[in-house]
Length: 75
Length: 513
Image (cartoon, rainbow over all chains, first blue to last red; front, side, top):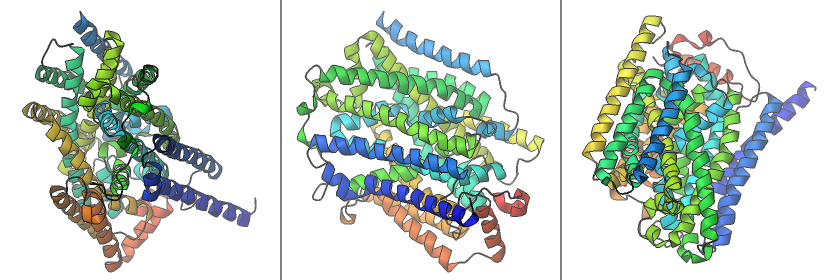
């Protein structure tokens, strides 16, 4: 892989890493999401409280795979 | 007969732990070996050590009680725990690399090195120790319920608390002798029993409850509602408790040291990947069981006892295993706390002016750490005995300590990912943030209504972060300090590129010692 290609890949990986962090912070912390999902219907509440951790676990899997490709990564 | 089975299971479990520890026979010679087990553990040991430190016995009591008494709001514990694991992934590289480069052994040591400041190091160590101590006392006391239920009414609750304190005090002998290596090795066995056996019991009771008419339709409508606009707590309350838990996770000295015990950055990242699904499965099983059990009349009137009351339906053996699971989780947490307090007292307070870089000094710090663990255990036993009848007040104090410990967050996280912060901003931010959080905690113990439901810890942390950033811009670092910080950050590899840097070139003063 040429140097510019390598630089491009690293910066796109960095954007993806930060993007996954921000996505999970929004899903877990942004009040309109959890207040809408847990507003009286147990089914919706459970979908949120099972779904949001699953998104995070999949994100960790992606981060780990990215990391293996780039031999270690810092934010 | 029942008490023989109940207490007999505890004896068998205790003997198993001692057998595993005695088989390792490794003695700690250097302080690095004693405090961080020579940075030698693989991903599975790291995973179990993290879980066993992170999920104390009170998960089966207070957190399960939160689900049983309040419904889905109890899931906040799963949300913040998983966010903490995501943070672990991002923190692993700089913390582990700097830890190895400068032979860092504690969290206070770490922030002291980052800001090149003894003041920051002592403030961080003090906040950590003060905030951890109530948890230690609570850990000793929480076994009262275990030994009370396992006695099947043969002894009083107060007597059961004394039995629990005695068992954990004896267990401390191995923590003192073996240091962090003993803690991590026993975490593997304790973790399997606590969350493996505990998770299976919870799964069994979820099935039993669902098939015996205790489904979700029997739960009150309020169980599916989080506090929103117009509620007593306020719409930002849930966000605040999740944020405090997630950011606060790595502010606890006993949790942070997990980033030093792994043998590499990759090991720590792998352990975060492994811990997340295990924690998700265990916590959800426990949460579902506790919520469904709300429709049992005895649980509805005493939600904090949901684990034991539900397990009682399985007979003597299942209740005994449920009790041993709580004991296993508590042991891991108490060992980690005493070990973290002991090493911080020895290295970051008593011997702060004596870098342990010679064999003789190293041996002296190890000796002080061992004595500190013994002293802290004695103080905690005294505290537990003195407050044996005021456990609910202690639970409140322990939960309140979260609002204090999270004041380390701005200096810790900004310090990891931003080059500009300085020692004065870090120290002032921590101190002012702690005072603001304490003042709000006294005035608004649950949440602050005029801030939309923010908790005292989050309000303090906002003030803390503003001070940190303001000092970073108002008091720019000297050229020498800027060069040191640049070299420090460049040594991590800013964008996935590992950089080889001679640690000597970063300056001998970098440890803040």
